[in-house]
Image (cartoon, helix red, strand yellow):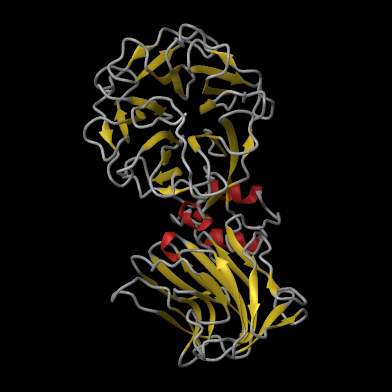
Length: 549
């Protein structure tokens, strides 16, 4: 049901590249669960798309081409008694709202009394216009739709509306003059609910691209705007702002499991920020395009040790009253800009739970007893042993470990992370080593974690490209024969090195150099003699978020 640039409702056949988890920098403080199809109570063998969930979570408005409607696309609604109950059969909104033309998608207001939607019915000003139908009460009858007029609509297509929770901002798509591409995101605002809508404003080049943007979905707190784009890495994206008065930030692709290699679009988030609805023609559906949902999960295992316990509480307390994005997880999963009792409430709801961090991009426990494979225990990024590494089942810091000879032994892995794509963290346990040797590197890229020469201090060569880039070197010795947990964290602007949970070096860089190579565990990026690790390496983890040990 994607518009094709003329804002019709044809299905656009797009082959979308699978986006790597590391692309999704937005997951510094929340992630998505596994998507679930809403099932045959909602979906049909026809196209079902463009959802809008009511503020109480008990009414789901969507567009469908199923039989029983008035035209090609009609607006339908499914209801349920509680958010834990099953959805009832969808009902057509009837001839007052729907016409033989295309009607939808829609966006329901927070009070449930106004439904904004797109239509190419007679009486409009362009190919598609934005209309609104109202009712006196939630149980009342929808009135005759009203066109929002030439201030909002134009001679071109103006559709896919998304109304803010306060009813004062209306986001929509238009290909009118003044945009960046064939379809841009715009917003019209009003001072009060009784005022007229003001002239639409383009969201600008930070959000819009020279490609096509559509299907905006504004969060209830107004801080996140989800949308579809067919820019490079197409699929569903999100842009974020610190407050409703701040400008929108650079969009981030949601990546898997939301985006796939097929059509994924039509984002809508529940009022509490806990459930994400979208449309997709991925396998497992009932028709051409179906409606899916996935939970939005706050990441409360702040130190990444797979347990929500006193250590995470200490981190939370240390950042109390700040705007730290790692600990700011409430009331929405993405926080509200301040670490306070709202975030503590979210943290305690997961207290004493064992959680495998959903932001782990790859995790090599290195606990094998034999063989030439180092298993990725959360995915398919298994490593291959090269040279003569020796498994030490009882010799690790956490279970087993891998003994490397410092001559030609290392582990080669598939591609995991492009450092240029956004925030990420990497941690490992090491013992032994010599100055100049490398713990983790990227083929064709940089040495991520090294024992600096001289001194054997923790360092990284991950840096900005060009003359501005420089290694980051700490004063913490890691080659003293003791076990040390070493780590590197990139938050998009700052580099930080950690040893045994303590920050040992930190600086600011505007970016990191891009690289698409696989990783080497226990060898330098160019496999240069002298860079091979001589000692033990255990429990290597890479996260697609900022982790504070």
